[in-house]
Image (cartoon, rainbow, N blue to C red; front, side, top):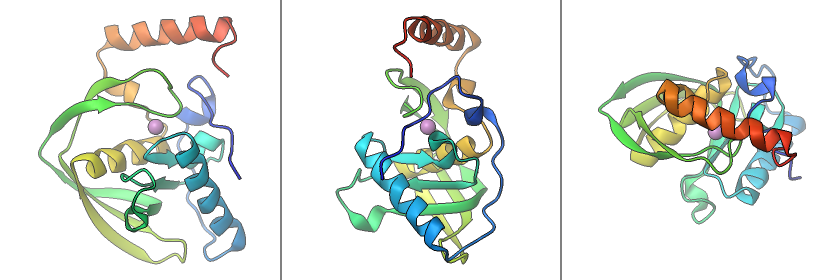
Length: 171
Ligand code: NI
């Protein structure tokens, strides 16, 4: 099932999410499937549970955008345990449609997370995957990419979004 994606301005996007405690359940498996479906529908490469109004520490990533099933990644209760290097590139977010800005992130990121069965694993991503891991893990801590922009740029985007909200173009 495709869920509605929550947009910037909804408080659920700026709250720290709660850990997932129940694994191996039909509900969790369905939620993961729905998140991939919603992400592909929105043409994103990552989606975090708060983006569909669920305040849980769960995110899905696919840097191949549906081209390669082997790239599908589910991160539950993820913690970034190591980073190195740096990269600057355009970043967007399905919850902030229409706005893409250069963001500097670590070039490599190692994350420790649980899978749908509750098993812990580690994965190291580089470049785009590292960026997605950092962006999505941030979501679970209520942090959006706007945080990394200059105050001037951030305020400009906020003002544009406020206008869109007023004219009913931001739902
Ligand atoms: Ni995002």
